[in-house]
Length: 127
Image (cartoon, rainbow, N blue to C red; front, side):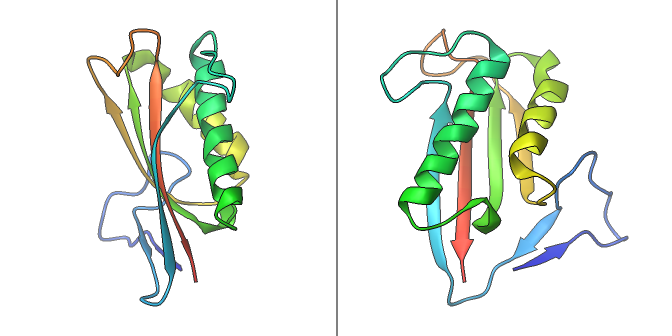
């Protein structure tokens, strides 16, 4: 995989890549929206706990597919509160430990349950 952050486009606002090139013969994993719900079905309390749990769920799904965070190429984040972007970036950066992926961050009116504050979709590719 190859990261693209050319000088001809705006530079990322935080630690992410504008584009990631994926080899044609790679295996692709599409991870549906992960929320702040533990394996036992309980909803985490508060934004940071929910975002952290969503990332933990993504890591568990990557492991299940024989992949790791090194194979992650993009995430799309849907948050219900506009003030959470800085908290989200800190949580993302803690999990990614310097890895760059393509990211999209969207504020939405609501999610599937009023108790949910964030939802994260992800894609991974293993060459």
